[in-house]
Image 1 (cartoon, rainbow, N blue to C red):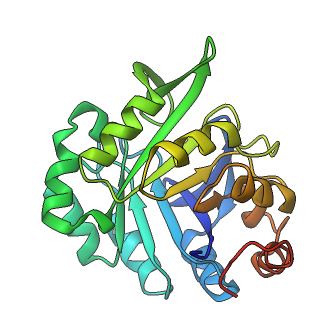
Image 2: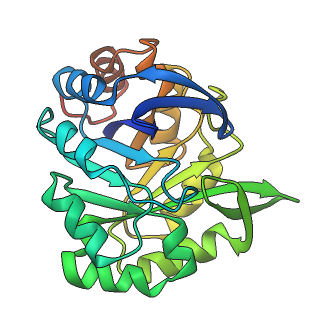
Length: 251
């Protein structure tokens, strides 16, 4: 069995790491370069860097900040925010990113997934999907969760895989920042219906939540922010606990 991955997430706004609840009420969580270096040293398997205001503000991800973070880490590094072209990805990869994450741009132009996968390889392309339940149905949202669509989560996830995405980062907006656990039923269904890895995001509050998302949600990786940023869970402690519960992790 492949090792499960633990992935801290740096949500970046105006050059700082921020964290909110249900995508709003953001508060400062520190310097992204310092945090990235700490997580790399503490045993994180990967790092995700999302410039959460890039799409909304119609500008590109901060390539210089990506470069500064990449110099400090020795683990795979995924960057997202405002990516809408081959040129955007080229710039980020040249500045040290290992993978890119696309979200709103993929929904608006699904062919982008095909084009990026063909150019850079599917292993490089992560499609992030933000969704919330509306009348019992998981609905995809865009622009940092601000714009609802009529697209259903599971339909879109299948299309994303068919178009060449190497991985899906699924964030439950209902669970984001609540620390009440991940959306394990939805995650489990995604894992059963797809053949590419699923990263669980939204809801981590304690070590048991990670255990549950790997066992019940069948997630391949678990992403979290505030529990790591504010030192509520140490990555080393988390991995030791997971290992004791029979979940394979790299230590």
